[in-house]
Structure formats: C-alpha cells, structure tokens
Amino acid sequence: MLFFKRGNVMKKEQWLLCPKCKNKTRLKIREDTEIKNLPLFCPKCREEVLIDIKDFKISVIKEPDA
Image 1 (cartoon, helix red, strand yellow):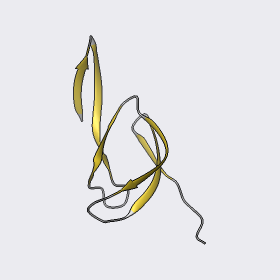
Image 2 (cartoon, helix red, strand yellow):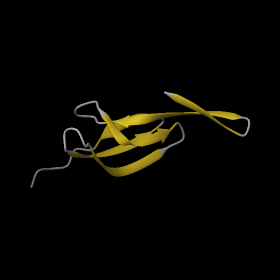
Image 3 (tube, one colour):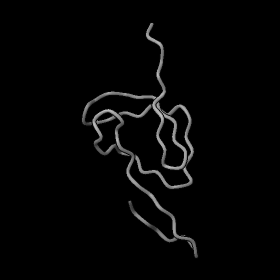
C-alpha cells in the first residue's frame, strides 16, 4: 500500500490485483475510488472479469452464461 500527500491530506493507494490469479494488473486505485461494472483485464492470466470497487473492496460480478 502506497501513501501520497495531496495538500495536508495523506491518501492511500494500491495496485489493483486480479481476483483470479492475484497478480498485479495495470491499474492503481485510491481509497476514495468507486467503480461500477469495470471490465478488468489481467495480462498474466489473460482473462477479463467484471468488477465493482468501493473502499478498496473488490466485488466480482457474475454474468449468466448464454
């Protein structure tokens, strides 16, 4: 977890990890990041997962199979 200073406020940020293989992706998130329906691609396992993010909590969205 990284810390950076913006003005007088210290913020946390961290690399977004793949929910399947737990490796680092190409995205960084901050503690105030909120994302809905993000198609996250992992360069290591080469899979795409739909996720929601709020307060460093990552939720994988299950899509019904066609």
